[in-house]
Image 1 (cartoon, rainbow, N blue to C red):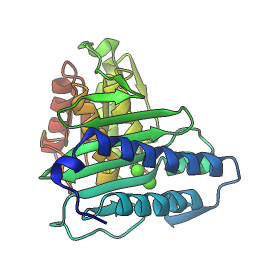
Image 2 (image 1 turned 180 degrees about the horizontal axis):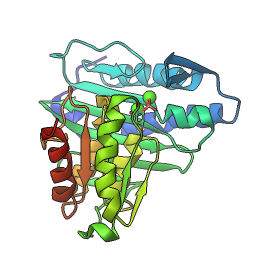
Image 3 (image 1 turned 180 degrees about the vertical axis):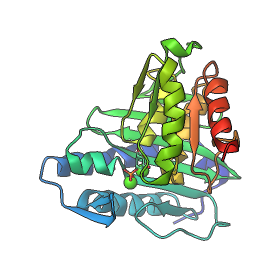
Length: 269
Ligand code: IPD
Ligand code: CA
Ligand code: CA
């Protein structure tokens, strides 16, 4: 085992390795999806399946072996000490509620946080065979084809997506939905935040917003959408880090409008 230099870690080569890990984890999810999922409830409405754990164990082992001197923070594992970066921020299965419900929309998400920002990201959707990936400064791609956000700046021509947080946070979301929904061409909900961000990167959505997310939900998507020319922040407009939770993301034409609505909601409370 040898130590990786920073340049080797933040390289197209490393990105390809992470893409391969995400695809293999996706293969595990795909295979287990064909059998009746084993589902547990971690807390009311928060599900865990045997597939989350199988993908988690595979990714943890693969990242640790292939990238010495990095740490892994996975949704299904312990959080390493914050100062120890580079840090892989991993969601082995984004869209667990979908998965448990047999709704065919979920993904593997692997992001890298280094030097104070998200630097590399891969999101793999095993049912569609989509691999979204990006390395900061090198652009974003979908299965090797460059990604670009849409150029639409009229809300009434825009698709905007959100997902349904539970409890009190849903009320904040609903107040913004009420306003965006008056004008947007259509609202969508995918049930997997990582895919919401990637769909903005691909130009299939103009915007995406959600509340109460965890870093593993957006770590990879942040790099992918920014490298595709999009904008993403918390609801006040701050860059997303390891402690962020509310997210607003859009192409540059729609982002100022969505941010105004989320800022108004934040400042009115
Ligand atoms: C969930 C999804 C969903 C979002 C939830 C997340 P999980 O992730 O990303 O879109 O609304 O807040 O928890 O639990 O399926 O990994
Ligand atoms: Ca998630
Ligand atoms: Ca998850």
